[in-house]
Image 1 (spheres, rainbow, N blue to C red):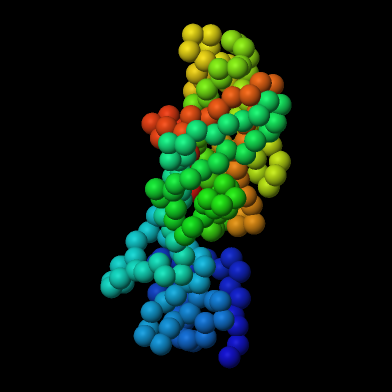
Image 2 (cartoon, rainbow, N blue to C red):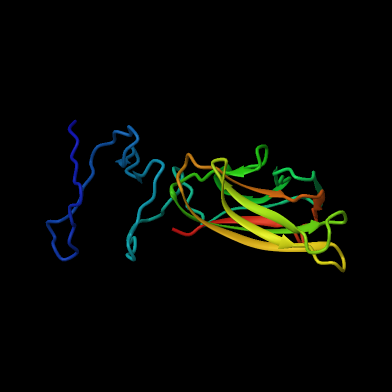
Length: 205
């Protein structure tokens, strides 16, 4: 069997001779026809560029998950204590959505199953009874162990609660990890109430 590399060859819609026919059933981690005559794309996606799949019978995703909503996590109503002057990773105890197990609840980090653009959202309610009024609590998105986006939340004087809704738009590969960390010069807690604290990750490109 020989391999054919097409590069950037343009298959024109109006050219009946410009068609790609795959007849080999060699899997070898390549696009192939299986023994049942089904076209399989191992660990990848088919980009139709606005087109349609017609007369296809059925389309399965046994080889690659293509859900846009990758993960939704929360703290399961358990508060998290944060020591003063310590950058602390936010822990999560529950994933109501976890497509292809992309969110690791053990290490409290997200790693994508596919390269692409991702939108990460997080809402954290901080309880700062020992934090002075007007003092900042930092919330940070970390990529591969490095801070990439930092937000300051100012704790109000009235009830010592601060609610931070933040987002991070990231171009990620399958070797990347993302997590959220917080810090302040005084100790505080992250409210575990699922009505206030949670995070979601969507694949957007």
